[in-house]
Length: 291
Image 1 (tube, rainbow, N blue to C red):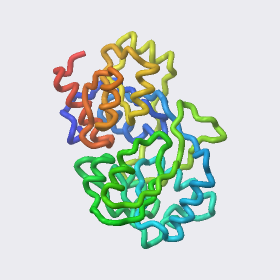
Image 2: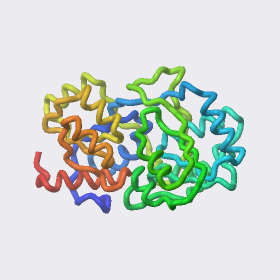
Image 3: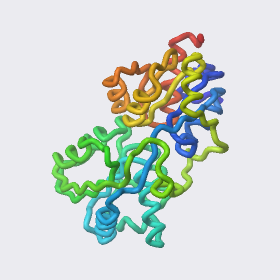
């Protein structure tokens, strides 16, 4: 059955490269496969545990003690960190967040994963699913906020919340590194299952050399970047893309790609597998479904 956001027949036979590891690419790969496309994966970035574990542990101790009014979760990888930290403490992720602390997040995937972990989300943008969207939604009022995030996270979310009157404690939750992460440091806690995120099987994984040959032969129809860091890695390792279209998961990723000189064929309106499928469908429909 065609995805409601993808023009019928536009994805059949298309070969789409997802620049994530197979476990993180699963939901998008499953949806693409159900629509007749061939999903392929090339992991470009990975995640390691924060170097300063005492600072992270202290922040989580303060969270559990009720020192924060809000916990802001800006990525699924942050949820993975919470799952890992809960396991270290012999408890559940939900037990890390006291009843009096509300949780905000950015995207629907994070919201579903948090719910599956027993952590209800009180605030999340619907139309603009980004740091900017959450800041726009945030009520101007004093609040104590814990913001665990990547080491390379930009200041937009932290500064935006502070401008709304929040006292923001930002802490490094994990490090974004080139794939593969060092095995002894890789953040790999298994995420709880969530409705809409289950995915059978695994897509085929390409090596860098295989990907280069596919790009040179013109046999890849699109490449999907799910973060600005993925766009930077694509610029560093995969250019030129030739006839392969670059699809961005959201505006920050599209902006980073444009700054790096990568033409952006489409940007997903919502940062979900369905949003990416819709963007792909629009690109291929506009081309008259020709090769």
